[in-house]
Structure formats: C-alpha cells, structure tokens
Length: 271
Image (cartoon, rainbow, N blue to C red; front, side, top):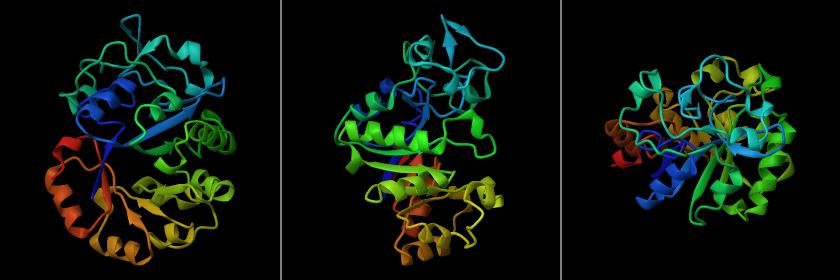
C-alpha cells in the first residue's frame, strides 16, 4: 500500500511548500499529493485554495484579514510578497494541526520548483477547479495545458498522476495525452451533484463511472468507501487510493481491504 503525503505532510510541515517537501524527503517519503492553480501571468503554482488562505498567508509578518485575492488575480512577483510557512494562532487550522512545525520564509512555489526537487518522487497533482464558480480559476484548457507544459519541461511525465474533482480536467488530459496517468477524485459533495462535477452524461454509479472514463485510479473520500467498492473497482481494473486517512486503525482497515494507497496528512502514522 503506497503512502502518499497530503499536501506534502501538512500535519507535520507547512503544506504545499518546497521547504515542507524537503523535510518529507529527509524522512524518506517520496510520494505526495499536491494542488495547483494558475496565476494571472500563466504561472502554475502549488497551493490548495483558489485564493490565498488567511490561516497561513502573512505579509511583512502581519496576518491578513478579510477576503484575500484569488490566485488568478495575482502575478508571480506579487505572490512572492506573502509567506505561508506558519499557521495563524487561534485559527481552526491551528487547532486541527497543532504539531505542524513552522518554517519561516516559506512561500507558494511554482509547480516547476516542486517537480525539480527529486526525480524519485511521484506527484498526484490535483487541478483545482470549482465548476459552480468557473470564473475563479483558469479555464479547463488553460489549466490542463499549463500543467502539461510544466510536466513536460521537467521530464516528469512518468512520475505524475493528474486528477481533479472536476472530471472535465482529467477528461481533457485523456483527450490530448492519453498516455499520462489519471485519477478521478470523488467526495460526498461531488457524488450528490454528479451533473455539476462529472458532467451531464455520466449516469453510472461509482466505481463503474470511473472505469467508464478510462480509469486508471479512483480516489474516493475514505469514510464513504466500502470493501465491496474496493473489490468492484479492482475487478474493473482500477487502483483505489482514498483520502485523507489520518488514523492508524483506519489505515490498517483499508490495507486489509487491499486499497492501493492512502493519502494522509501524517505519513509517519502508516503501519
């Protein structure tokens, strides 16, 4: 069972940062899930939220209030003014991850910087899209083609898996680069509105719907997953990689079901 660090290992180090990934690599972890967005200038960056996150973004040592700018409203030079290596004290994020080690000076990196870290790494790259707010991000075409350009420039095509909750993104990858590995993310929210997230023509239930898209990996929310679904997915030729599994007993149970990997904030808790 492959252990995949969620946003690096955000329970331990600042999420989606070069510094956090390096700390993981120092501990021997080489498989990561990351999130990407596209700036106004077209640069592909590694950041979970569509906008800067006020629980981690600071400017000149000051925490920021109110609505922060969307990534697509910023250029690379502007983004570099913000630090993202600490959690705002007293925030819900700080309560959820009290053991995260801060790293001063960490900033939102480019995807190119992350892919250059170690040629032994595998990167599960989530293309962040909100189909109900399409103007908050780059278009599907711009995002997919921007990511592919970076992946090709890094010579990383054989060590990335491209995925999204908005299935139009991996579907676009399948159409123009069918040889690349793809994963189809699902959650309770997307399952409740498949027409929005998967497309109006998707009628099959999971995991058959993923198989009908050409696979190869299904990444469901772990709490909704059943052993029967794992067995069905494997019979359909799919790999199953649930997220975000943080408790050792849950990891053990999923391992006993035969899942192919788990995405976790705590790679150090893996059995």
